[in-house]
Image (cartoon, rainbow, N blue to C red; front, top):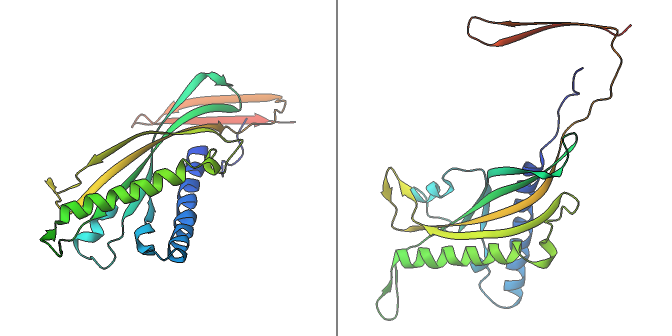
Length: 219
């Protein structure tokens, strides 16, 4: 018996992409609202990335756009044996990390000057504030995936100093929001058919790879 082609996304992939879509749409709306209120809309701008390792590296060579960055990536999943079933549905608790980065440039002020690292920290905190408020808003309780998502919860926020080639980068500050999401994962089903005859031979190649030889007769 063979499964049909598995041509789908798993729940954790759908949720990761949905988080990104929610943030992109809401951040754009926040900038419109800020401009309408007579505020600097760039202070509500956060660029969203997905599954990048070092999204901040662009700032090492190009500082044209220094608006903060948020990179969303899937970390891990744990499956509970107390819910779901062994056939079609498993309940997963997945962890998604949202890494926010802020870049700071030293600026002159009326009295003294603003240090680059202080500016980076303030920019990162601003991004964290925006991301947290959007994801924990009531309308995003189920991340727009009710029936798939059972709960989303912000587990922690950790500020850190990104490194490049083993050295801390003074003008960039990072902050990780760990978002825990409980959701369903579905597995494919097979329509059973009666076999009149089946012959299976299992062999191993010299490298140890398992090779399956099978004959089926549906007559």
